[in-house]
Image 1 (cartoon, rainbow, N blue to C red):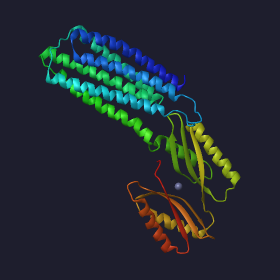
Image 2: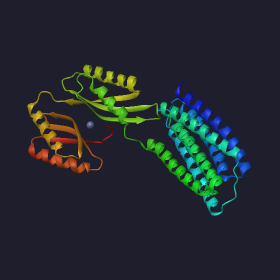
Image 3: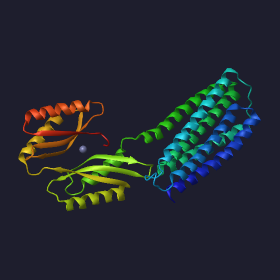
Length: 366
Ligand SMILES: [Zn+2]
């Protein structure tokens, strides 16, 4: 079954489970005049809503690429996750307001054994449902399902604290429903903020995932003549569409034909093994010049003395033109242009006949 159909099927199971619980809890809440149980029922309703939004979002994000959106519509999934998080936050605010009211003006509530058994059953059903939805979401990397599943697990916790409040009332005649409600609301709000930050970060653009970047670079470096893979960038348009670019360093004696075959093979492996559409750029490495090798060692020594420089790569010089070019990756916390000028001045002083050109690269991936 393809990914989108699995998301829809899992969401449908979530909706069915929630509707059963809504009916159960609303009936019990009305019968016992318990705000906590009624709140719980309302929260179940919003859970079903999150499954409905997941289904709509999945339908939209599965739309084929078109002229206006050539990268597809996969990022709609991030918007779906954000909307679910906002629903959770709204539920948290509502719950907090009503629990505060309940703390200030406590009402007489009565619990029956039957209602407690039903709530206990709801805890178990929610817990199983949440785990199932979350597990499928993690398996197929679907943020909206993970959010929906976390929310369900969270509801199980809410129902559980309702049980605790009831037990305290029945056993010791303590009235702690309002206080517990405030606590639960706090947890809902915290979870909601965390759930909202996840898709927002994906939309802003995150550092490449190391579990993808590191093995991808290893694969590239395993090709003969590749001396290093640098400047790997990865952009994703939804969880199943990743584009990227990389620079590989090869000996300057290679021909266009050899480079063509090499870069084609790398791009094909990147797509076949990692699902990444990869553009491969070339850095040449000097093989024959003793003078340039000496300058390269001098640069390496300078770089090693400066901990704020994370990497030097792409070193290439021309003995006839007396030019040297290389790239530096400077830590985000350091002043990159200042670091560049310091290195530039030292090299210019040591090798006055040469013209140095340093490019500052960004630290995109591990
Ligand atoms: Zn570079």
